[in-house]
Structure formats: C-alpha cells, structure tokens
Length: 376
Length: 151
View 1 (cartoon, helix red, strand yellow):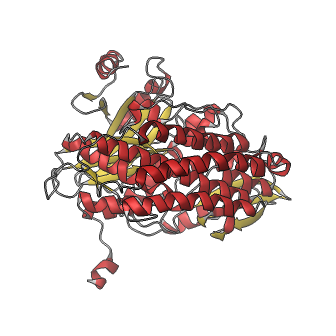
View 2: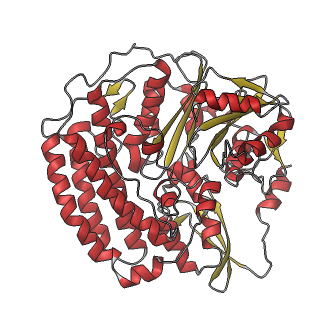
View 3: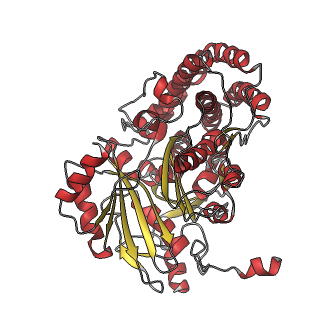
C-alpha cells in the first residue's frame, strides 16, 4: 500500500516536461510551500502544490484544549488576520452558549476587524509589489501597517497575534487614545492610498504583468470555492459581512466591491478598493462606540451544550468557517476550520497552465496566500 | 429561503434520508449509497442551486465516521448540511463528490489524509499533509509512539 502510493507521487504527466521545484524555500511563496512545476521551455504545463511542511495538527491540538485556550491557537493560522480568527472562534462559542455580547464589544470587534483588514492588505500590497520587482513598495506598505500595529499594541497589548477576544467579550477595555489614534490613522491612510496608486497601480510594467494574466472565471471561482477579494475579482459575490452579518456589520453601510475581469489586476484592485471601504466602515463606528461592559461574566469553566455549531466570518483572505462538535465536555470533541487560503490555493493549476513561469509569481502573489493557513 | 421553507422543499424532493430541523441550519443525513445522487439533486434543483461547497470534514464517533458537507448557493446564500455515515472502520469508503464540486478534490484529500476515509472514483487520492505510512491523526484511537517516549 505504502509503496504503491509513493510510486503515484512521482508520476510525470508528460515525459518531455522539465520539472522544477519552486520552494519550499522561495521568496515568492511567502512561506514554506513547494510548487512542483512542469515546464515546456518557459511555459508552465502543469503545477502541483505540495503542502504540509508546517502542518501542526491544529485541529488535533484543539481536541485537547479548553475553549479559552483554543482562542490563542486560532490566530496562528492566518497571522495577518489574527483578530478575525479569534473572533470567529469566540462567536461560535457564544452562539453555542446563547450569550449575547454587549453592543460595545460588537463595535470594538468590528473596528479592529477592519483595521486588521487594512494592515493585511497593506502587507499584501507591499509584498506583491516586491514580487514583481517594485522594491520600494515594501517600505511604504510596511510604514502604514506599522501605524495600525501601534494602535493594536496600545489597546490589545500585542502587536501581531493579539488574542484580544475571549468568549464573551474582549480582554481589555479600549485605551483612552484609541479613538484619536484611529482617526489620525485614517486621515493618514487616505492621503497615502492615492500614492500607492501612483507608485504601483498606474505603473505600466506592473499593469502589463497583471492585466489579462491568470484569468479566473466566475463559474470556476464558485466551483473551486475561491472566496474573498480573489473570488470577488471574478464577480462572485461572497462577502460574508453581507450574506450573514455578524458583530456590528448589520449597523454599517458599505459596498461589496465586485469586478468582472477575473485577472490578477482585478484581484489587486479589489484589495485596494477594500481598504477604502474598511476606512468607511471605521468612520461610521468610531464616534458611536456605546458605553458598557467590555466583557460578559462567563463561567470559569466553559462547557458547550451537546451539538454542532457553525460560524462564518469574512477574513482579509476570504471566508473562514469554524465548525465545533461538542459532547458537553469542557474540551470540544472535534473542531474544523474551513480556511480561505486552503480553498484559494488549489485553483492555481488552472490559472497558471499555459502561462510563462514569470507569470506564476504574479498570479500566486495576487491570490494572497498565507501558508500556515493552508497547512494548519 | 427561510429555514422552514428549505425543510419543506427538502421533504418535497423525496430524498431518502432523515431531516434534522433542530439545528441552526437544516441538516439532511443520507445513507452512503445515495450520497452522490442527493448531492446532484441539491446542486441541480433550481430551488436549491447548491453550487458552492463551503466545507467538507469528518467526525470520528468511535463506532462510525460521519462525513459532513456544508453546501450553500451563490445566488440564494442559504446553507444546507449534508451528512453521511460510514460504519466500516477497517476500510471506510464512500463516493467522491469532486465531479459535482471540484472544490471537493482537495477537501477529500485532506479527509483521507487525516481520517483514512477513501473516496471512490477520486482522480488523485494521495496524502496531502503527512507522509505515507503515517497513521490517521484525527481518529480517536490514534496513538503516536513518539509522544509516549516524551512522557
């Protein structure tokens, strides 16, 4: 059995293909990931992603931990959307316990969600620019991202993996400077985003390398489950904030940006537009944060009633679903995470086949893949 | 569609299976033999149009496995949960759904990797994360010799 499988692993689709491994350690994979690429000259004929280099058995670990402990595991999956992962898990636990969190918590969570989305897209923007040779992008993108992280540091007491959510609320109350700093940041961001456009969006080399490259049709996006900005770039309306609103999203007005082209540039544009929309959402909430508790009093030992619970959340990369199966113990019987990057990755063979090898970098960059989110 | 409407429509479709109305989303449990047919019906019926497979996973209940599919529609945005039980622990096998939803290809490979459930007619069923010869870690009876040594 084992020998048979090993033989299956090395089957080459075409004898005359030249096989090259991109990764596991390659700057464009943004993590430990191997693309086994078959080439005819410079043209990609087939690409097989090999994952598992940093598989940590997240779902198995969850089976041993209590619910408040698992919150700290969840942000290790997509470290750029850390807050949303914490929130998704907490929302699922709260749904199971039928706990209604105070309005203040909903507002805080949503504002930090949107700040997280901005910093995630800012980092993606600079890394994507650098993949395509625009090195200076990296410094500008990180500059804006650092300002968000400073805000997080003050309020959440952590810059990167905040673990700010707990079942029933958030860990600390907002810092007194929070509102002022967020408003200052939004003024700064609105000045800088047009500069991003000048630097990269309207750059002729960048446009030629992304426009019409890696076209994903709407049908394929739905069939393969490509969600988030990557799916919306193909016209697949999949924003969970609109479909199944959670936290304070029912109270805010924003537009779900959609494009029809489905190429790398459309995916790029979706993320740039989303930063503007996130700023709009924060505008509507930041002055209206209601007073109240930042935490509901929960029992010291959280036990979910027997049953199965499912929570959908929109992260910066796409749709995240948390599925908890409980038998009434203090640890879950089974936890499953439907992570966005896992579904978004496997479309890459369809997008890249027939293109030149340099386009592989442009396409994989436009999908915004986070490898720990794929491997879990 | 509202939940009650979905349940009414599911009953009207004549699917051989149990419908659970108590959960947040309507659940339908079918025998493994009719899984593929039911999935096709859910996708092709204009009422449901479940064209987007959100997630697929399995649960090990020690006596049997339950494979759980969360399906939704890109036009109506309702969620339907499709379940099937596999009782054979030695050689669990069910039909693949990758011909209906291409997204299932890698989700099923993940289930095969972590639970050892085989999918009939799957085009490329090999392990996704772990090496060949590794056990199936999400099974409840999984033991790892190295963990014992550490203790």
